[in-house]
Image (cartoon, rainbow, N blue to C red; front, top):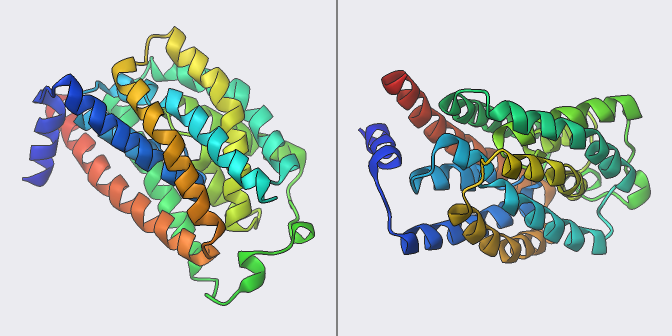
Length: 282
C-alpha cells in the first residue's frame, strides 16, 4: 500500500511551481548537509525528492548534478581549512574520475531510466552496508582510528589502484547523477583504511573535480531540468556548511552509524518503489 501510494505520487502528481521550488530547496539543503557530513554528493536525498516532485527518471539524474559541484566545493573548502584533506589521494581520484564521468553521463541517456533508479538504490544499499559492517571490527574508544595525526594517514594503494577507484567513482557519478563519494567513502575507509573524516574531506575534493565534466555532459545532452536544479543549488551551499561544521566535531563512529543507517533505509524504500514501477510499467 505504501509503495503503491509513493509510486502513484511520483507518476501522477503535478505540483505547483512554488511547491516544487520549496521542496527542491529543502532537498538541496539536506543534500548539502549529507555531502559535507558523509562525503557523498547528496543525491540520495535529491534524486528521490525530484522524482517525488514529478521529474522523469533521466531528469532525476541530470537535475541533481548542478548542485553537487557547489556543495562539494563548499564542504571541501571547510575541510581544507581544518587540514583534513589528503591532497595526493584526492587529486589522484579526481583526475582519474574526470574522463569516466563523461562516459557515465553519456551512458545514462542510453539506459532505461527506471533501471538507473534501481541501480542507484542498489549502490546506496551497498554503501550503507559496507560502512556499517566495518563497525563490527572497531570499538567506540579507538581514538587512533577516529582522528590520527596528519602524518599517521598512509595511503596503502598505488597510483594505478587509486586511478581504478577514481575511474569507477567517476563513471557511477556520471551514470547515476550521484557525487561519487557513495563509492569512494566505503572503499577509502575500508581497504585503504583512511579515517572517516579524512576520507570524507578527500572524497569531496575528488567529487568536485570530476563533477565538472559530468555536469557539462548532462547539460549538453539535455538531462537537466533547471526548475529542479536551481532551487537545489540554492539550498545545497548552506547545507554543506552545516554538515562540515557537524563533522569536524563528531566522532568517527557516530558518522559511520549515521551514514550507514540513513543510506540503507532510503535505499530500501526508494529501490522497492522503483522496482515496483519497473514491474508494473515495464
